[in-house]
Image (tube, rainbow, N blue to C red; front, side, top):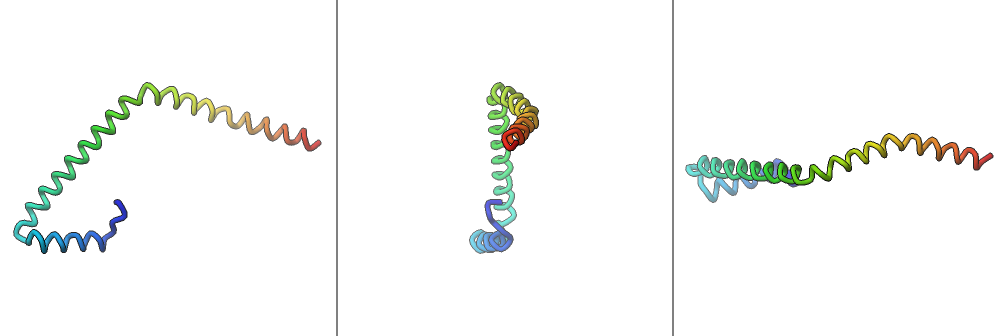
Length: 88
């Protein structure tokens, strides 16, 4: 979580309580949480849009990666055989 640990969160909470006051703290927390939720919704919509836009490119690349992964054992076998032949 951005390198923020428990001690830092406690310090932030204490500062917020001192600045806002305990009476207004629930309202401030509600408003802050609503901003966080809204931000998450926006990030998810951006992620969905990026996925949608990159779909035509991503599928062929995944197919190529799969083909390469299928050929890798064969290539390694040929390399091993070639090294054995070179040694003899």
